[in-house]
Image 1 (cartoon, rainbow, N blue to C red):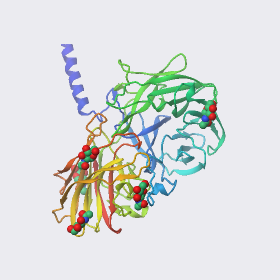
Image 2 (image 1 turned 30 degrees about the horizontal axis):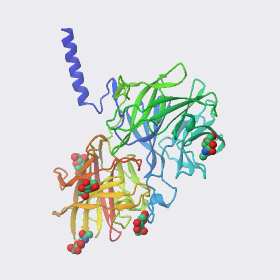
Image 3 (image 1 turned 180 degrees about the vertical axis):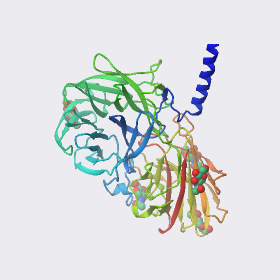
Image 4 (image 1 turned 135 degrees about the vertical axis):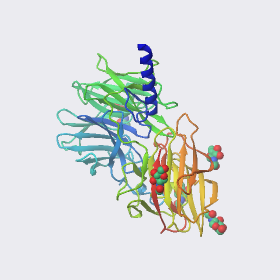
Length: 526
Ligand SMILES: *[C@@H]1O[C@H](CO)[C@@H](O)[C@H](O)[C@H]1NC(C)=O
Ligand SMILES: *[C@@H]1O[C@H](CO)[C@@H](O)[C@H](O)[C@H]1NC(C)=O
Ligand SMILES: *[C@@H]1O[C@H](CO)[C@@H](O)[C@H](O)[C@H]1NC(C)=O
Ligand SMILES: *[C@@H]1O[C@H](CO)[C@@H](O)[C@H](O)[C@H]1NC(C)=O
Ligand SMILES: *[C@@H]1O[C@H](CO)[C@@H](O)[C@H](O)[C@H]1NC(C)=O
C-alpha cells in the first residue's frame, strides 16, 4: 500500500516535472543550463549573486552580462562594451567588416574596494581594453587601452590584498600585475608554456585563489582542461589534467574544455564549461567539482564517466524571466536581448512603441548591410516571428527575417517598382577566413504580395541541434494567425569558424536608393 502510494506520488511528480521542464524548479538541473549561445564564460560571485561575462564577437553592444542566484537560472542584464569603437570595419564601412573579431575570451570582476566592475579583453589580437562601470548594468565606459599589449584569453584575479593580476596567453602563459587603479600594467612574467603539459597549445586562461594558493585554469582547445597551482601568482606552477575528452551531455556537442571554476556561498565548487553545438552555438554546461588531498580539483562525472546530463541543484532554485516571449518595442530603447550585426548607424533607427528602421546601406549583400538587428535563439527548435509594416518601403528595398550566420538565408518582402513580392533566399555564404561574401544567395521562392494591407509576418523555424537536421523552414502570414510555408527547407552551417551560433536577424536594406523605412511591430521567439 505504502509502496503503491509512493509510486503514484512519484508518477504525478514526474508528470508535472516533464510538463514544466523549462521553468519549474526541481531537485536537479539539466545540461545545458541555457540552450543558447553564451560562449567563453567568465563566472564569479559577489556575495550571493553570480555574474557571467560572455563573448559575442562582431555583435554590438559587446560582451553580454548574465546574472543568476542559483547558477542554473540566468538572465541577461547588459553588456560591458557599449559600442565596438575599434575601427571603421566595426561599422561595416565601405567593403570592410569585423566578422569573428570584437569581444572574445575576456574577463570581468567586481572590485569591492572602489566599487567598480572591470571588464578586460584583447581586441583584434593586438590591443587590450579595460572598461569599467560603477553599476553592473552600466553605464560602462572605456577606462584604459594598452596599445600593442594583447591579454589573449585573459582571466582577472583580485587578490585578498586587492592587487589585480591578469593571466593570459596562447601556448606561453603569463601573469601580469596591474597598477593600483587596475588600469595599467606594472609587470608581466611568463609562468609556464604548453610544452610543460605537454600540448601543442593552451589558452582559455582563468585565475583563482583557494586556501592561500593560486590556481590557473586553461585548456588545449581539443578537450583537455588543465589546472595549475602555485604558492605565488608568478609560480612556479605544477599542474594536473582536470578533464580529458569526456563525453558531452549535449548530443553531438563536441569537446568540453574552457570555462570557469565557481565557489558557492556554501563552499561548494562547480565548473561551467560550454559545448560546441552548432548551429545553436556554444552552450553553457555545469558540473560539480571536488577537491582532492593533493589540492587539485576533479569533475564529478556520471556513472559512465561522462559530463552528466543532470545533477542536484547547487542552490535553491530561483527561476528568472523566460528566455522566450514577445517584444513589441515599447518605450524608447531596445531591450538587453537585442544586439546589432556590427555597430549600427544610430541615425537610422528609432524605438518608439515599435521599431522604425530606415535603410542604412545600398547593397544586395546581407553580410554588408548595416543595422541588422540580431536576437539569440533558444532551445533545440527555435522559432522566430517578426511583424513588419512595410508601407514606407521605397523601390528596391528588401526587409525580412534571416537565420543569420556564415551561411545565411532569409524570407522577406522585396519591392520592385510598384510591385511587391515575398521571397526566400538561401545559401548566402562567406569565406570562412577572409569573411568576404562568396554568394549573396539564391532565390529559392518568390510569390507576389496579393493584398492591399502593408502588414506582414515572417517566421523562421529551425532544427538547430548539433545532432539534428540543421535545416530551417520559412513561412509568412498576412494576419499573424495562419502561416504558410514558403520555399524548401534551407541549410544551416555548423562549422566553428565564426565562433557564434545562428541568430534571428531582422534586416532592412536598399538595393536602389536610401530613404525608405519600415516599422517592426513585434518579434516573438519560442
Ligand atoms: C615561449 O616560451 C618558450 C620557453 O620559455 C620561449 O623559448 C619562447 O621564446 C616563448 N615564445 C614567445 C612567443 O614568447
Ligand atoms: C523588376 O521588375 C522589372 C520589370 O518587371 C524586371 O525587368 C526586373 O527584372 C525586376 N527586378 C528584379 C530585381 O526582380
Ligand atoms: C568587396 O570585397 C570583395 C573581396 O573581399 C570583392 O570581391 C568585392 O568586389 C568588393 N566589393 C566592392 C564593392 O568593393
Ligand atoms: C543550398 O546549398 C546546399 C548545399 O550546397 C544545397 O544542398 C541546397 O540545395 C541549396 N539550397 C538552395 C535552396 O539553393
Ligand atoms: C502577433 O501574434 C503574437 C501572438 O501569437 C503577438 O504576441 C504579437 O504581438 C502579434 N503581433 C502583432 C504585430 O500584432
